[in-house]
Amino acid sequence: MSELDLAAEIKSLRSLFGTIKEVINPTSLQLEVDALRQKASAQDLWDDPENASKVTSALSRSQDKLDLLISVESRINDLEVLIEMANDASDTETKTEAKKELSDLQKLVGQLEIQTLLSGEYDSRAAVITIRSGAGGDDATDFAEMLMRMYVRYCEQKNYPVHVLDVSHAEGAGIKSATFEIDAPYAFGTLSVEAGTHRLVRMSPFNAAGKRQTSFAAVEIVPLVEQTEAIEIPDADIRVDVFRSSGPGGQSVNTTDSAVRITHIPTGTVVSCQNEKSQIQNKQAAMRVLQSRLLEVRRREEEATKKQLAGDVKASWGEQMRSYVLAPYQMVKDLRTEYEENNPQSVFDGGLDGFIAAGIRWRMQTQA
Image 1: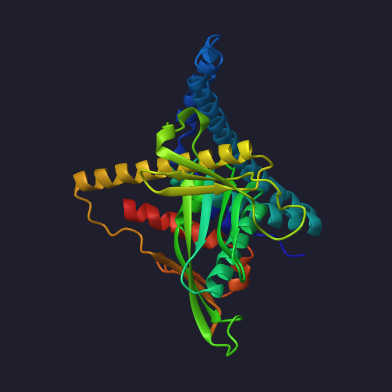
Image 2 (image 1 turned 135 degrees about the horizontal axis):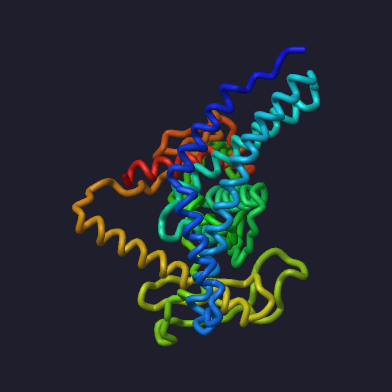
């Protein structure tokens, strides 16, 4: 039986992990954890709930990151021992186990690499995604629904909790818009590179002549605000409308005016929520999304000011960031990073890892 030789792969894995450790600096991270733990143990911590929440959240994030570093390094060391055991015993089952562990570690270290690049102020937050259909009629509303399914499938594969807040169904196929919350660490930093205009080219199923149709959908992604930093919105600045939920028939459609639409008058921002059970819950969820969007507006204004002061004239993200081509050939291509794949169905089934990783690296390069 041939000897299992994964030396080159493990060397590459150790090299990448070593670079990640240099960036994160476990010693510095441990000091940070110790300092936060000391603050968290103070008897008067909860006299100031806002500060207490910030301290405990920061402690949890830092401790999780430190634990992950320690765990990955230990697993890499154990993998080398496992390979030696498999070769000494000529054990096929242990060799298969070693190969699987290597594959799992490569994915894990790859995710760690991406997280080390997510150092923005809001990157560690949960995210709120809004998808809106654009030009293209029924093809565009159908495309918007395809994108919603794509992101939900991606989140399911990552075990990210998804909470749908609002869906506006089109009269024909698909949806006019949808808003959903992804409550997972680094959801915003990870998925924010998906924001922009998406383009679909295909033989239209809604055209009797079967002609090729181009349609568009917009994806907006904002960080979810934390309760301790909610933006104060004066009652005079909002208009609240209630209405009856709409959607496919059945028991899921409310028979009372429980759906809520909030309009932020100064900016014209409109948020709707209809998927909660009561009007109060819908209003609370809608306000949370509105605050998140206003926070993102403020963040962008601050970034624009900084760029202006620094004389930064780099081009911003183009409106059309990705094309999904189903005819006359099969390809999905990101127009910013040039990353592409030739299996659109896999992408629509949630296979976004390659696009997201390329997008995060591209963003870091353009900001450097």
